[in-house]
Each structure stands twice: as C-alpha cells, then as structure tokens.
Image 1 (cartoon, rainbow, N blue to C red):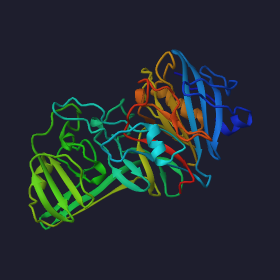
Image 2: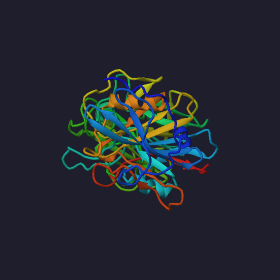
Image 3: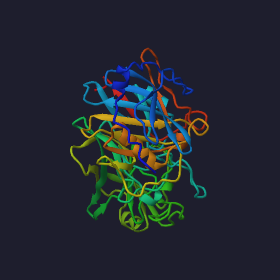
Image 4: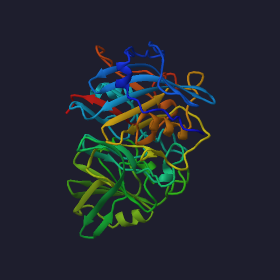
Length: 418
C-alpha cells in the first residue's frame, strides 16, 4: 500500500478558498469539491466550515482500490484561548450513551466517539459493563485504568503499544499521545497490597482492583473473568471483595457484587492470589487506599481517552494491518501539540469503502498529524456537530448501525468552557 502523499492542509486554508457550506446529516456535501493533492489516493475536500474561531468541520473523499471512502474531519486549534478538549462520558464508567447526547449534556460544540469498550460478553451469566478498555481522565479527574492487552476489544495492537496508551491534553494545553501507569496500594496494619486496577472491566490474573462511585451500578463480576492471555477464558473461581467506608472495612465476601457505590465508599476486588491478599482483611480493620495515574510524558494530563497508536513522529507504526478495511475513527495531533485532528468515516458500503488501519495512519499523517491513535470503529464511528445557530449537536456521518450507537466515551471540542 502506498501512502497518500498529501500536502498537509488545514481547513482554515480551505475556508479561505471559499468552501464555507455545511454537510447534511446524510453526508451530502454542498460545496464545490476541491482536490488538495494528487497521488494514487488523492484526498478531496468536498465541504468545510468554521464552527467557531479555532474550530473547523469538513468532509472529504479518498479513492481506494476498493472504491471511494467518505470521511469527516474536525480540527481544533488549542492555541486559541477558548478552545479545549475533554472526555465525553456518561454519568458512570459502567454506562454508555450516544455521542450527540454526551456532547449536548456537557456543552461540546462537536466530538467523535472514543475508545473500544466491553459491549458484548461470552461468559455465561455475566453481563457487559459497557466500560472502555483504556484509561479515562475527565476534567483532571482520573476515572479508570486499562484492562490487560488480551482483554481488549477491537483489532490487534501494533508491536510496542498497549491498552495503557492514550490520546490526551496536558495542563499546558497541548495534546499528545502518551502512556499511563497505575500507582496504587492498600495499606493496613496487616501489610501493603498493590493495586492493579481502577474501575476497569478486567483485572490481571492475581490482581486487586479498586472500584469507586465513578464506576456506577454495573456488576463487578466481569473484572474477574478472562485471563492475561485470553479474553474468553473462564471467570476465576477464587475471588474476594472488601468494602471500605471512610477508611474502615465494613463488609467482606467471596463474590464480587454490584450496585451503586456511595461517594464515601471504596470496593476492592481480588482474583486468584489477589483474593488471598484481600482475605487477610476483616471487618473493622482500618485501611488507606491510594491511587493515581502517572503518564510517561510531562506535564500531567487533564484529559485522556484510550486509543491504539498508529502514528508516531510523523511515521506509521510497524505492523499495522494492511488488509482489513472498515469504518474507522481517529484522533491526531500536530508536532507542536496545538492542532488536533478528529476523523470519523461514513457508514459502511456503498456509502464508504472504509480504510485499513495502515491507510488510516497515512491519512492522519497527510492531514498534518505527527502522532495519532485508532479509536473504536464500525457502528461506533460517529461525528457530532453543533453548527452556529443550532441548539444541539447531531450525528453527521450516517453511522453503520443506521443510527448512533451507545458508546463508552468520546472526545469533545469545547469553546469557552475554561
């Protein structure tokens, strides 16, 4: 597969060329098509408009060996004082919601879907949690950590990447692709227990996970199912759960539970040797639970969403799939961390031929991204936009399911929020 070799344009330049009309929800562009560059796979922008100073939205077409792929591009200039990104998310980690509703509830001007998530289950009697595979940070608050690589949903990861990889924004206002780690422990007079999870649907074998009020009412049983090598492996038969309220153990039990967790309460779940460690705790014991997400890069992230890296230092990663085409979404960032590119493709053929992951990486590089991640695709791929004068954001890419899919999270563009 050859790269697109597209010069790196910006929608601001396209607007200057006179492409100022919008795209209808059905995906029909009302503007004269402009081919920005020519190659084996030329990218043609068919419409674009400014949603707000520093925020643009447009549609494009790419010719592939399988036919034409239709896509939608949002750009956000984070150097503008009032433009920012944050996580679009439901009221709880273990819930799902459509992107347009999340954008409207949180006041985003536009957004795309986010990470892959636990949307289906093969374990008998175990219900999906609908929580994402990777970490989540929203408005500076650390909501969850990442499941083991083998427990992830979605296509295979490129060598050297993991579920801990994220697309995010630091306290300096610059976006980047980074990797998070969990630093946490449970301390009592009986010793110290390492934490291996935070509000996630799968724990590593022998691990201990923390669930907080952010998790919601979803069952915690799924966290003890599967293994570090297979998502479909059976659930552990050796588990333990400890409830801590205001620093004191108030309940213990053999099986993970469900239901809303109060704000003053923490629930610890252990599997295998992690269950043995928790079994030492008894009702009345005083414990201190501490956890934080640390990033490989600096400064600290105020927003993060899980994503599979596909582009680094302006080059596609080795080992990206070149055969399987699908409807996809992606997030990328310019070399200086200031310009963010959010892409979602139109629904399945005949509306769009889709991209392989390698083609998606080439597209993001061509648009101007220096680093990029692959987000959830297929029926999850959604771009929602609220245009000037409109009261609410609506989906624009005719999602593959025929309507918006309920998803775990998304990336929102905000104007004047902070």
